[in-house]
Amino acid sequence: MSPDEQRPGTGGPAGPPVCYRHPDRESNIRCTRCERPVCGDCMVSASVGFQCPDCVRQGTRTVREARTVAGGRVAPTTANAIVTKTLIGLNLAVFLLVLVIGDKFVDRMILVGRFFDGGEWQGVAEGQWYRLLTAAFLHQQVWHIGLNMVGLWMLGPPLEAALGRTRFVALYLVSAFGGTALSYLIADPRQGSLGASGALFGLFGAMIVLGRRLRYDLRPLTILLVLNLMITFLNMGTIDWRAHIGGLVTGTLAAIGLVYAPQRNRTLIQVGSLLALSAVIVAIVLIRTAQIG
Image (cartoon, rainbow, N blue to C red; front, side, top):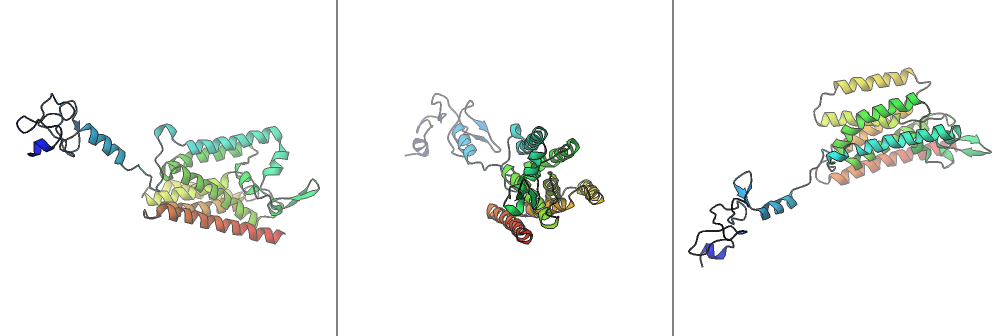
């Protein structure tokens, strides 16, 4: 039996080859992958020659999903910066609660080590660990939340696009915890602290790590970071510099683990680095709680 008799879509031993989808149409053009004849209506242009519709569909199914530099999924254009927008929305929602409920709500959510109120001891040292997170979403002044949300809108979208949504959320939260943990460790237990600045400084550090990884010009970003640090230390009486430094260090270390993790076992290494940072933060909180108690 000849090759034309064995292969589907041909015209047999005597006739010319015909399209495998349209047997009434002769064709001398074959798919570059399966070598079946295809007519003009069925051929699909490829990098070399033409392919049949079946091979094109099969190739589409086997194409590897696009990934970011950190291994995250590339978000569709219609969902750009959705995590950043959600974080901004959460901060604004909490700010509205502050305006409606007032100081009572702030006193319940602010970061404070230990204080006596309402006939009982309260604070992180009394088991109210949620304050380490809620304080990072808490603002009292319009200018405070305004500046922080502008910063989040500037730094969030490029980091979210480069890291992927899940990794970006992890970076933001671990930076926030790192900032509040250092503030809890060093500050007077009765001193309150609030604001998203610690998380934002973590994003600053992450942007520098990412820029170095992608060989960007870091001078504008470095200048902006230095200016923010100068403002922080020139206003130490009103700005919690501990949260800023804690967030910056934590975000930088987290970004190194995310961006420089080797492709092999990348997710495992990234998760491991974030868990290691989280363990250090928990240890800091436990040590300070023991000191205050």
